[in-house]
Length: 250
Ligand SMILES: [Zn+2]
Ligand SMILES: [Zn+2]
Image (cartoon, rainbow, N blue to C red; front, side, top):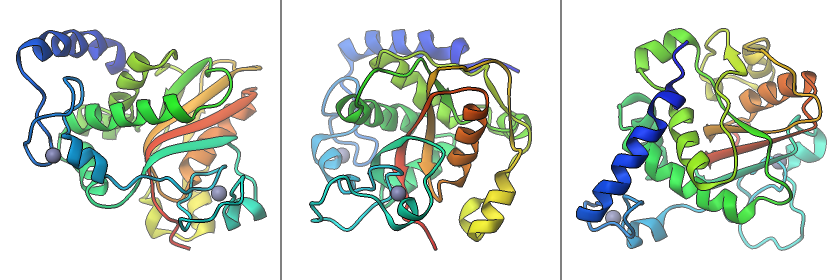
């Protein structure tokens, strides 16, 4: 498999640093002047993004704002603890973040990976507690989908994370052996069946702390399954870092 991450990390980052000296960044949403040379978003559009500022402490499910009892847990996490230890999702999956993520996944808008990656890195840098993970694993795509798309959006995000935070990206640990159906359309039982056995792991993770990187967590079933596989390989702690979190359908 082509290791896209290693192949293109240094190139765009170097190019971007050089370009930023001459050309200011441009907001991807309104074409206004970017807030800083590394963020293609103006200060107003940045401020208007739907922040996930009141969320379940475990799975980052958006909760009603204004609840002040800590730590907050959603109803599902109270009933059934996820296989990951903590999730950090910077934004809510609502306009315009939903559109940016769809364009990143299906519209070749790789620039949104850089913008959302910067936002995610800043959020994780602020919110992460304790030691940094030994490695971060971008959510893999099945080989066929990767070839159709030409890139993996989670690796695009991970590229920025690796640049901004003291973590190392590993794209060689997990393989997605098959693509799964869109999780949002399935009920809870179907969702766990849908993702069961979708990942295979090469390597030993005994005692390791791993963070999974994904674009959007919708139901949590996919990251939960990957967390299960990482734990089975010995991972001591598994975190989930995503750009956005959608509210659960049911
Ligand atoms: Zn703007
Ligand atoms: Zn929860």
